[in-house]
Amino acid sequence: MKWVVVCLCLVAAPAFAETRTYVIAIGNNAAPTNTDGEDLGTLHYADDDAADFFSFMRPFSRGAALLTVLDGPSQRRFPEVAAEARPPTLAELRRVIAELLPRFVADRAEGHDPVLMFFFSGHGTRGGVHSPSLALLDEPLTQEILYADVLAALPARYVHLFVDACHAEAVVRPRDAEAKGVQVTGEDVRAYAARSTLARFVHVGAVVATASAGLSHEWDVYQRGVFSHELLSALRGAADINGDGRIEYSELSAFLGAANREVSDPRARLSVVVRPPQMNPRMPLVDLGRARGALRLVGKPALLGEVFVEDELGNRLLDLHAEPGSAVNVVLPVGRILYVRGTLGEVSLSPRADSVLAFEDMRFQKATTATRGSLDGSLQRGLFAASYGPHYYRGYVDKNEELVPVPLEPSPPLPITTANPWLRVAQAKSPGDDRDQDRRVALGLYGSGVGLGIGAVILGALAGQQISIYNGTDLERPASEAQHNAIAFALPALTALVLSAVAVGVGTHYDKRSKRHDPNRLAFSW
Image 1 (cartoon, one colour):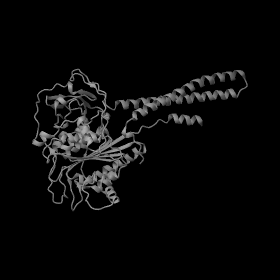
Image 2 (cartoon, rainbow, N blue to C red; image 1 turned 120 degrees about the vertical axis):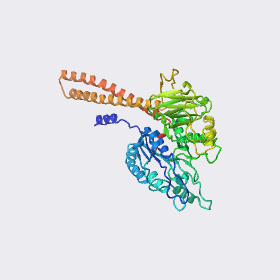
Image 3 (cartoon, rainbow, N blue to C red; image 1 turned 135 degrees about the vertical axis):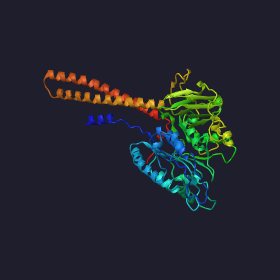
C-alpha cells in the first residue's frame, strides 16, 4: 500500500491555474426608442468599434461573441468577422451568457480564472419616464439587467466593462456621481451604493466614455468612435509605460488623458471615467506577452511626432505620441500591408508572424496616400498632440488616488536587428516569454520526476521480491543470488528516487519563479 501511495503522489502532476479570457463585443448603430424626447440619430461606426475590439481580443480569448449588424463598408473592412456577427439584441445577449455560464463554472472548478471583457458601443439614454439604458435592437439594456443578467450571472474572476455611449455613466455608474445632497445616514449611503453602483461588484472594473445628448464622438478620419480607437491603441501597447507587456488601468487612464489633453473644444473632448476593480486595482486588462503570430514595433519614436498605423483596408489600428526617450513596444496584426506614418513620411510593411521591427530601422518616404474623410479642426489639432511617457504618467497618477501606479523600472532590451528590415526581421521575444520558459522548464522537470519516481517504484518492487526470496529459503546458493539481485535492484531504485525528488524540487523552484509578481495569482475563494 505504501508503494501505491508513493506512486500516486509522484504521478499526480500539479495543475497550473491560468487566466481564461472571454469576450462579448456589442455595437449598435440604431437609435433607441425610449429616448423620452431626446433626438438621437443613427450612428455610423458603432458596428466598426465592436468588430475592431472583437478582432483584437479574439486571439487572447477562449471564446468570443460579436453582437452587431455590419453595414457594407464595415463588412469590407472586417471580412474575417462578418459571418460571425449576431444581432445586437437583449435576447441574443442572454443566449451568449447562457452559453458562457457552464464554461465559467467549469473553469472555476478546475482552478482557473475566467475573465470577461464586455464591450459596448452605441447609444445610451439618460432616463426619465424610462430607466437609463444602452440601446439594443429589441429591448434596452438597463442597469438592472446589466447588473443581474451579466455581472451577477457569471462566476467571473474579473470583469472588465468598456462602454462608449452618451449617458453611459447613468447605466454603468462606476461611482454615484448623481447622488442628491440630502441628510442620510452612513448605512443609507452604503446600502444605496451597493444597489445602484458597481460598489457591490468588487471584481468589476469599468472604463466608461460619456457624452451629452446629441453628441457622438465619432470621427470619419478614424472611421471609428474616438474612444474605441484610443482604447485599442492603448491595449495594443501604446499605453505600456514600463514595458512589461501588461496594460493596467492606471496606464490606460493616463494614456487616454494624454490623448485628449490638447483638444480645445469641450464639445469634442472625450470624457472618460476609469475605475479599476476594487479587489485588485493592478489587474491587467490584457497581457501582450500572450500575443502570438503578431508583429511587434519597438523603439523610441519621439522624433516621428504623432505616429499612426493603418492597414491596406483602411483600418486605423494605432495612434501614439511618445515622449523624448520613451520606449514603446506595440503589437499589430499580420496578413495585410501596414502603413506607418509620422512627421518623416510613410513606410509600408509586409510583416511576417512573430517578428519584431524597430522604428529606428524604418526608411520613411513621402506619404503617397491622403487622409480620408472630413476633418474636424479641434480633433485634428488636439488628438494625440500631447506626448505620452513616464513623465506624463507620473504626474497623472499622482493626481488620481484610485489608480495604483505600475513600477517604472528599466526593462531589458528586445533583440532588434540592424540589418535591412525588408530583407530580414529579427525574431520577437515577447515580455511573457521568460515566464512561459520557466513554466516549460518546470513541466519538463515535473515529468522527469514522475518518470524517475515510477522507475524507482518498479525497481523497489523487484528488490522487495528478491528480499522475500532471500528470507524464504535456507539454501545458500539461492539465498546468495537473491541477496545479490536485491542489491542490484535497490541501488538504482534509491538513485532514481533521489533524482526524482531533485527534479520535483527544482521544478517547484521554476514553477514559483514563473508565478512571481503575477497579479493573476491572487488567492480567491468563490
